[in-house]
Length: 290
View (tube, rainbow, N blue to C red):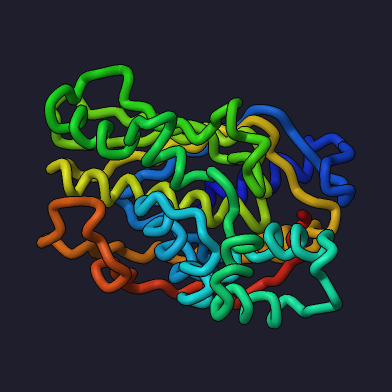
């Protein structure tokens, strides 16, 4: 994962101080690209421990077209908690409840979960129902029947629905590409906004996993995950965490194993996805800017 560390180093050395929506402040650059060859291992960061379980469950949640926090809470995945919790704390229904109490109500109170636990028409909704179009299943059909199309695209950016989302999509658009010999499949992701410390390690692994799953059900080998950035930034309160990683030597990448019996991407379950040989450095924590 030298590519990731090079990106961190580039932003630390060349980034410009900018104010941002969250009020935290960032060091930011505009325009950057990294490439990950999946034939050399699965690109899960080793210079800090990344919670692969959360990546898997979040991606399965997207694939299912779901937008409810309850699904993630049932699997103890916390990465989306901050946004609905902020909506709740800003409401007249809030009476000092902790995050833990909020999540408990999401799990046990149907009316509360419906009111405060839906994230709006975010990724899963757009992937599976973009104005009535199932982009994901249409893509898979095209990959099987028209592999050299230049329109193998899924967009999460929906101007008519962005304002209804708990968080407008940061990873906005992906495009797939089949090799000339029709053996390898690549994916390019365009990410308009990229939090290098917290978000990007998840994004790399999530889209590498999606590429692997799509390739598996379409009869291809996963090849390159190309990651193209718009505003790539490091929050001001993450500088120390980034510097810690820059002092660490990346370790060998793990391997991904998928259940070969799965032929429909909608049939994948957590148990069908296995990571082998992951040996990262320890966890490094940082605050989420909401």
